[in-house]
Image 1 (cartoon, rainbow, N blue to C red):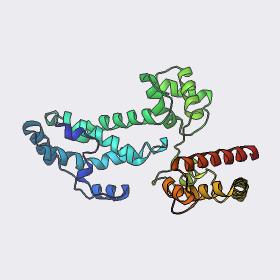
Image 2: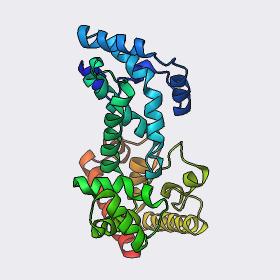
Image 3: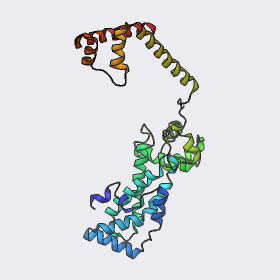
Image 4: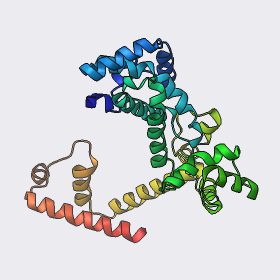
Length: 290
């Protein structure tokens, strides 16, 4: 298959832009293929490299991707991301599908769809990887399904899970501890979260200091103190130095050295020296009052 079918965003040009709900509703309006139609499209793609046929195969089976992705909603990841990853698995399945096998595409594609979703969950559900071996991955995706509850397992349940998955009871205990004690929470809320999850997201629990009375009062006091210190510092200067600083820094239209030199009938260098001396005196006073 051309690489275009394996690009994560390749389906976006085929779907209407909008919310996830709009996209899902649009996909469900696409008619299902009969076995004969599916076989014909698969042969066109396999024999002729017909990308239009491949796109039709992908789009008509996206409803199954959505159904599979919904089974993984308990991992705290955005549904849109799960569907996107599942669609990549579907595209990989279309690339490898052989119509001569005599099976329907969805039966062949389920493995690829789940595999991509599993990889995405393992990459993103935890900051620290918790499942690296094949046995750990098997436990990760089956432990909660087999126990049918979130919480610590009894010894009987641990033994049952170990027998069902052909692993040791200790492996079950280790994975159970990781699942329960190492839950990462997304900082930002997602649009498809429930109302409770949306408002309980950490970003919505940060304290807003914008209108904190104590903070406002402290800032006002600091500003007033700074202005009063500046007024005292300016008052300590001689009249000429004070006027030079006001003309150079505190006026809306700032005067140049040459303009002040002409006004006071001295050189521009002398004005610069007076300005620097006045600045140093003010800094010394402000540092002393801090």
